[in-house]
Image 1: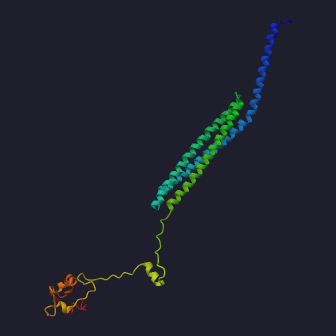
Image 2 (image 1 turned 30 degrees about the horizontal axis):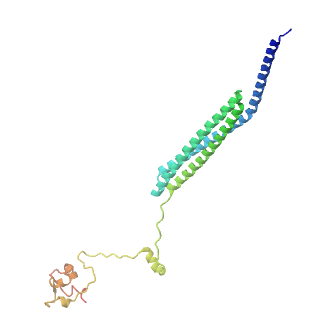
Length: 260
């Protein structure tokens, strides 16, 4: 068979095209095969970190619920109640932070898994999928670390809430005893001064007063009248109490406790 030059050229070009396509396909298969292992490892790592982050988020939520329950049980002091309120709030915020981090880790794991699926399916740009999978795995690991720290903070806050509600009131300060007192005097000072109570009739005279009977008895009749007692304000105020026989005059006997 004899071919013209034109026909030969056309066949040559077609052959080169076929060979080029085959070479490209072969190169693509090589790149895809090389990309499978790293994307698979990245995807597995991302999924593992996402599961860990989810577990940490659940632990943080349980700690927040425990803190809330402790707060609602009631504290023994007002200060403890305020501290419990703050710590329960802190635990709640840490729980929300852990949940957000867990969601971020799950999203990153999904992206890494998607990159692996693209490589397994023979998609284009296998090395691009490798980069994407590794980046997503790193994001999942970072989110898992955030979730772990948040869970630890929530647990600490829950413990602090429990301590706040169970804290007893501070004891009263001991009485300060003046240095230099004897043992008996120190004991007396510690318990306070002794107080004696007396039961007295309502008309009893209370006081330590002294009067000059002779000076008050101006008319020398042996009794001090109400008018004669006016020179002594204290005696005037208690005249009725001293006048036990209520005859309007105070005898020396009635003033026996008052006279000098």
